[in-house]
Length: 104
Image (cartoon, rainbow, N blue to C red):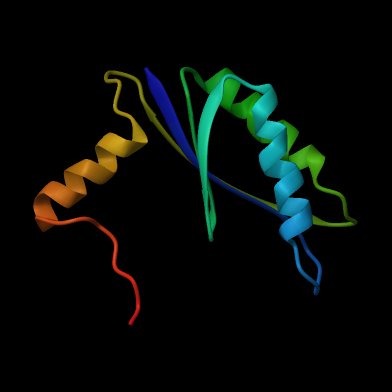
C-alpha cells in the first residue's frame, strides 16, 4: 500500500518563507518517505499512514514562527499500490503528452 499526500507548511509572515519551508522539507529526510517539492507544496509518499503522519508532524514542528499554516491532503488507497508517478502517467496517457507546459 502507498499513501500519497500533498503537504504545504509555511510560517504566516510577510517576508520570504523559503528558509522556513526548507526546514520543513529537510525534516522529511528523517523518515522512510519519498518526496518532491514544487512551487505550491511537497508531494510525499509513504508505505503507511503512520509514517506519513509522523513525517508531516516533524515538518510542521520544524518551521519557526508565531503562527504556522499547514495544509495536508491525503490519498490513502488501501487496496492498491499506486505511486504518485503512476497517477501523473495516467493523466499524460489521456493527454497524449507530458502534463507540463512552459510559458513562452
